[in-house]
Image (spheres, each protein chain N blue to C red):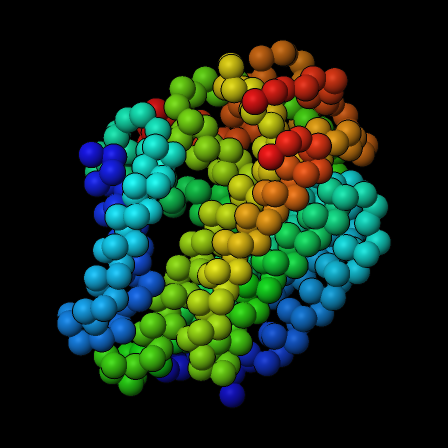
Length: 122
Length: 85
Length: 170
């Protein structure tokens, strides 16, 4: 149980660090696109590590209690939540970035903009 | 005792920072980014609370919340683009 | 065929969500029957949207390549997060939007590439030109040597992910 607890603590610390960095970046960067960088990457990564900490812990309890533990359902459903989060976050960021560019947000301090003035229909 | 309660408190503080960005803005896309970030944090917090209180239902709520918030993000993004649905 | 594949995928997802609910294997009888009915209804409704034209993603070789691809992808993702954390804490950014032409043919490959780009170092896909399959990418730290020539070299921007996407779904 000791090794599992150490792994859980490490995962919690990594996850919380990246979540906090994501929130700082959201409040610190100058425009929508850079904020999306911070928010999407850091909070997705941090949340993955927090959910993995939960999975490690509940699998540990499951192994201790035997096959008919309620922790088995919890860990399997946590894996499903992890996959749902991974797939939906990247796609959502994509949709927000496209909407921001179509609504006329300019990237702040940009050195190059290949998409400038183009309006691509779908 | 594990560190679940401090972790949950730190997550709540992060969510407050994101909600502050929703109110400050500027502009609809920035608010949508902040809202999407808040949704991700809510999903992670729900999974942590499920283990803290030993309730499997919380994880089911987290799955449904993740999928529904994704659909809501897509719809609001379409709305900001100014297109018909 | 498309109907059958969609129904099976939906049924497997339902079984995964209701695992451990009874004594008949791992499920109880009511869950199994209701899940089958719902899977058939869902498959009848969405089969033309879920699988567009071909069934080429059923090939297990492609799944195996996808599984191998996870390892460089996860490594790049960890690298990306350390990089973004560094930029958040120091505030050094040099952003810009660049156009890359990965020459991918299928929608699935383009989706895999766009999601990979969003989750890996310093880049975020913004828009896609559906006629020429070009991607427009927001890059947080533009390197000046890429800006010299017009068909941009994609290796400094997104490693060799287009090659992986072509191998998985091309």
